[in-house]
Amino acid sequence: MHFTFRQLQVFEAVARHLSFTRAAEELHLTQPAVSMQIKQLEGSVGLPLFEQVGKKVYLTDAGSALAAHGRRIADCVREARAELEELMGADGGRLRVGVVSTVNYFATGLLAGFTRAHPEVQITLDVTNRRDILQRLEDNEPDIVLMGKPPDGFDVVAEPFRTNPLVPIAAPDHPLAKRRRLAVADLAGHSFVVREAGSGTRAAMERFFADHDVAPGRTMELTGNEAIKQAVEAGIGLAVVSRHTIGLEIDAGRLVELPVKGFPIMRKWYVVHRTGKRLSPCAQAFRAFVLAHADI
Ligand code: PGA
Image (cartoon, rainbow, N blue to C red; front, side, top):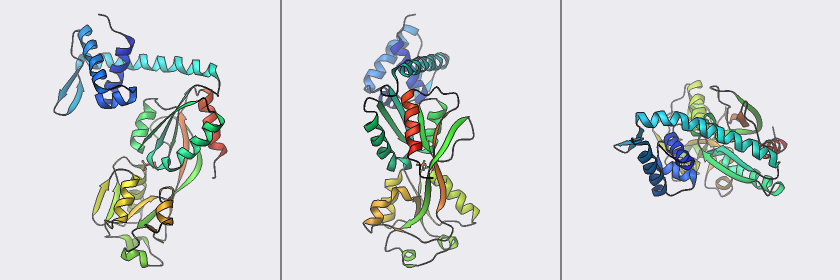
């Protein structure tokens, strides 16, 4: 049985995502290139490693067995790379940053400042919602994560660096937009557009309404902050979003923040990495840069 490290690397990515498309994206390959590597690997192993049932990809028993080893090898390679990057100093190396979707409204500004000071560092920015960021952290993929409340399930080093006020918004012609003062109970029964399951913003909003014994009316679920804002502008309903996401629309008069007593829901943004992770000098420099620009 003979297979290459590259084939194993491709296999490990497909096994982790259970998706050829997402593995191809992560590895910057085309999907046919990924399928070809897997086919060749299956050829030399002599057993199928994946099976497709309906639209879903599953690991076979042979695939599961190989995946356990593939994961350990990938971790070893990551550690080897981290050690080598450490030797390169803070002015070089690769930095993998993961941010929750809402942070992306200011993350690019932070990264721009950091790259001015460290132009040689190669940065990968991964933007996704809270649930997916937690999964990536658990898989030890990003060096540094910028997110809301740090996770409880595993050990992380987390430092707050900015506040995150969540506020209720409406279209300017919504009946509640005319009111000068509102109570949380005034929101009851109104239609809302809410973020996808897995969003930290949505979880915080649901907790807030439950704590206040208020039930929104009909809800429509949309993915990402941009879709939410457009739906609110179109008059589909109210929403609760981070104030960081609405600056342009408020200035242009396309959205209004409702003056509801009890809001904003005050959350914080944290800079986070796994406990025990060996941060490369550029990751340490980035963490220090974020904390140096903290306003908390
Ligand atoms: P979200 O994250 O973009 O997933 O809503 C925000 C948060 O975790 O506070």
